[in-house]
Length: 149
Image 1 (tube, rainbow, N blue to C red):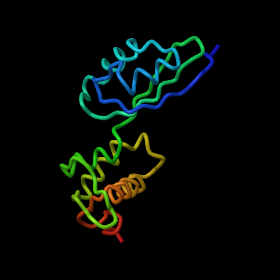
Image 2: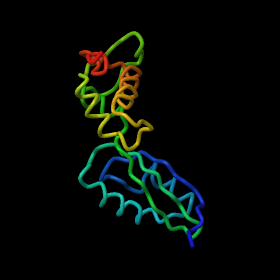
Image 3: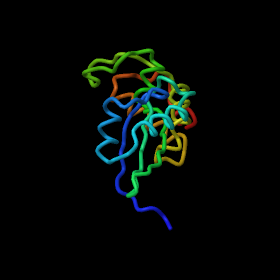
């Protein structure tokens, strides 16, 4: 029989760097989860992605056991990395702070495809382009779907 779910906890933790300090400790401690066990298992799974921000969804069961799913790095973080920026524009509609190419957008879209609700790579690219716009990053070149027409 399946275990009864008590709660879902969503966090963003740097890969290979989970520790009992906030935000991990208080979020898990409030639900009665063994914090050190989570940190050990998370760090072991994300050793290859050390330093990257990774969203994680933790499912806590009634018996205080847990499972977790690690998602791909957020699109905004990947865009800032590609544009070699520390942070986005405070006024993204007025001040553009960086630029990426459509090839870079496609690479991000392919990486995030499993976490996006898109069936085609073009749809995923449009979502990433929207994120780029909201961060204040321009996309140079012509979109691949515009060149085909």
